[in-house]
Length: 201
Image (cartoon, rainbow, N blue to C red; front, side, top):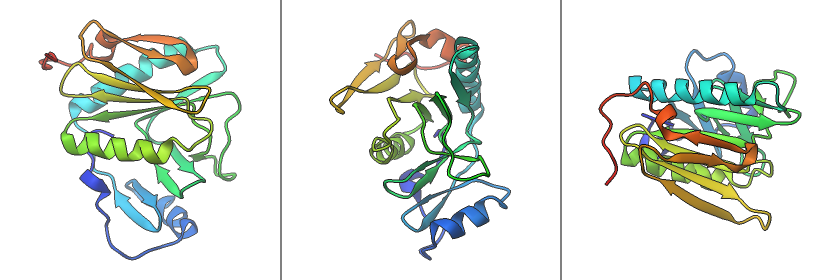
C-alpha cells in the first residue's frame, strides 16, 4: 500500500470489536484498517502510486476479461478470518466464486492475488508485515509488492506444499510472473505512465 503509515500506527489504543469496526467503517468517508481490536488510518496515495495502480488494473483487466477471475481496486476490503485482519489491498484478484463476509458484499474472504505498492522503507516494512497476516488466507496464491521509486517487484508464490517462494525482479525490461492466473506481466507496462524512476543497480 503505497504512501501509508509505517508500522500501522493506531488512531487510538481503545480496542473495539470487529462488528463495531465494520459498523463505523461502512459509514466513514475515509478508509481505515483493523487488526486485533485496533483501527489504523490509511493516508492518501501519491500520483506515482496511482499511475502504477491504474496501469496494473488496465493490464489485469485486459488479460482477465472473459476469464473466471476478476480484478478489483483498493475500494474492496479483504478480511482474514484466521487473525481478524481487515484491510484494503491496492489491487485484488479473485478467481472463481467470490466469497463475502455478509450480504453487504464489500468484504472479500477469498482473494487469489494481492498487490501492494510501496514507496519507502516504511511502506515496504509494512507490506512485509501484512504478508505475514495475509498468507494464512487459504485461497491466496500470489502476493506481489511493486516499488513506486524504482523498477522493482517482489513476487511471493504459494507452492503445493504450502511453502512460499520469492522471486525478485529488478530490471526495467523484466517480467512479473503471476502463476495463480498464468500471466506474464511486463514491468515496462507497469511503469508506462511513470517518469524518472531510478534503475535498480
